[in-house]
Length: 209
Image 1: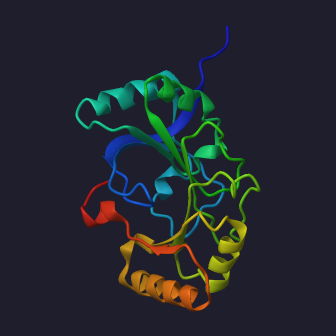
Image 2 (image 1 turned 60 degrees about the vertical axis):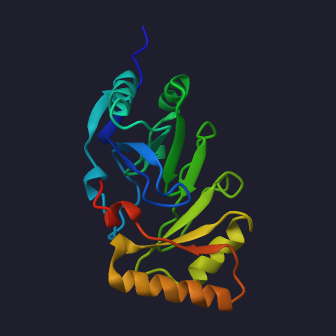
Image 3 (image 1 turned 45 degrees about the horizontal axis):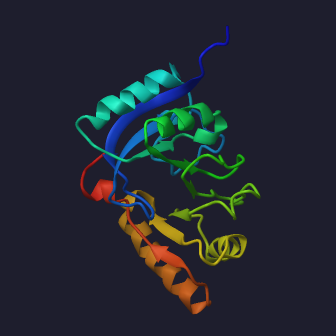
């Protein structure tokens, strides 16, 4: 008898999507454990390692329980790096429950074709992405860390189609990062780069998880 699929999870909670094009939508987050990048500016370092081996059915059960008090059409698989694990069984079960699934990834693993929405957030120093992402990502999210340069933005603009927005997200909403994000946006415009947008972490503005 085959063992039921499991995933290493850090936490499951209901909140509002605070980042990217889906900003402001009620969302249930499934934070998976493990990451292959481990950036110094990461604000979820607790998900780098460890986690609890959780059956997929139990994850779905918890998502449905949370929906009783926080109705949401979307579930976001985040991390850590969610695509370091096989998330397909979970996505299929969530689809069976009529839910839509967003995956937030650093883009170093192959894209998950069954996800409804792929958010790719390439990381320094090389900002590498798997070649499957340019045609599949709905948005590119660049954390405005101290390492981000206009050249990196230019590389991402060349890598992804013109219709795919590149979102500049200040690091933890820090004042220095917001100031830098605005300057990068202005410099990108002067350089003729299009489809570059400015953002903030909305959930932190509202004091949400």
